[in-house]
Length: 276
Image (cartoon, rainbow, N blue to C red; front, side, top):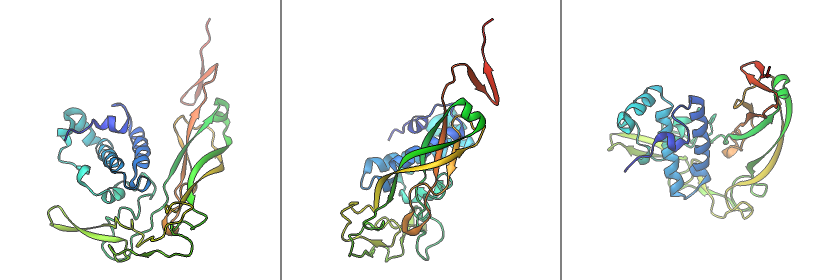
């Protein structure tokens, strides 16, 4: 099977720096994440493809070999197309601030329940004038967020009904699989209940069993003076709610700066071109 160019997969140029690559991967991983595309085989393939591209381009040594020799230069690395998506989650937990915890399940051994997954981080943009960049600003931001359903309180179950114990994992939220020719055992998040340990028999009508409803949110954020274009300001716990009482994710507000008719910024200086 012919593989796509890794830069093309992430939608970045060959001169992109590490932060650009990380941001592009975060955006695509959120878009194609299996939890947001249940039953969508094409989205799962793209999710794995993005993970494989990031695994190479985020490593300076692998990226250098890839730039010089193409896919052949990194052929000894991971081939994510044959991996279960649950094994990919824990590998990039640092990017999402814990958003994959409990979904990966690759660590921690086989005992006990899988950790409840922290909520997904969200991203939005905040536009500032050059004057606001210089002195700082307080901005009100509107964005959409998947919150817990008011009807089922996030369980996905019809009110009055109760989830049942998952028969595949026995309520543990984890299953053991033989990996790489049966040479060792790998514990992963149960694909049937996604680590919850239970499954819903009667789905909530209000949210179609997802446990989530899309709502508009408004928050106020203080932007410090001197921020740069593309810099992110994090608002703690304003992302999507976590599973089973786990903490919510964060909201990352990326700064954009409106062009000024006279001045432009160079590092921490203002520049003005004046004809003489």
